[in-house]
Length: 155
Image (tube, rainbow, N blue to C red):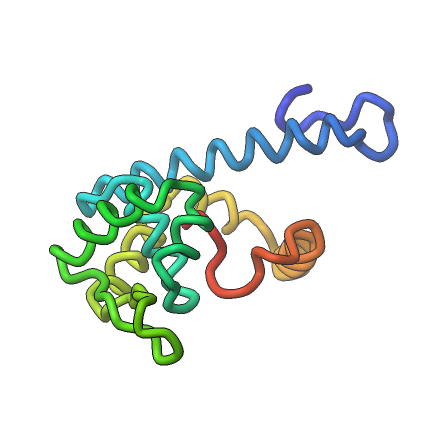
């Protein structure tokens, strides 16, 4: 199915057609995000961590779960981000054994810069009028209800 062609059935797209459209869209988004992250010297995983933390601080283990990586890998990601002063570790107020990762002001500026440099994605979204933007926002919230808190998982 071509990018803008109607569904094969002539009515509502099938689940397979929706999945294909999502896969293509997310692939383009992720490529754009990866390129934008590289412009500020971040790996995709580092930028994704900043993006997740843009919503709220997170315990190391929860951050590893959200990023779908091993706990030892998240330690390395956070170490490198902390070295650049993009995040800091703070002990949890409720459990001193738990370390929360907190986005610093510089980290916030950095992820905002990454998002601002996502020219392909921004250009595509700029083609939508206010009604389409509202509809897309609402649909994404219905399809991915757990991704609406904070800034989402990628980017």
